[in-house]
Image: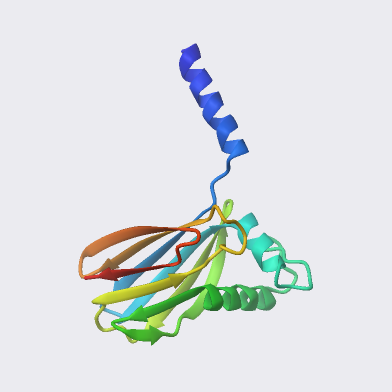
Length: 162
């Protein structure tokens, strides 16, 4: 019992000294709607600190003074840091909005007019300007298959074929 408790305390202490810098990006091809649905989960504090680098006013994601401005800041950041090519064509990502869930921000976007998703090429630098220990984990679903890949700084590109 004491050994088990010591292990948990040790792990908690190590986590405090060496925090994780991870975001999760899920891309799901919705054949019925002919869209690529994008969900990005980022720790709120990490995104807030990163957006602050590009803003002259205070960024407060949990209590924004101007929701429209915050959405614009998040959209601009995602447009700069995430580029997709679907079936060899550069894709326009349409920002839909965000929501806060506990310590994370969920960002929602989509790429319309995606009848088939055979190949997805990704360029992603989300939070690479925040922390060089950043990892971006991708989960991509198409044609009943799911593939995953982790991009660790400085690696910023990958592709998926279905």
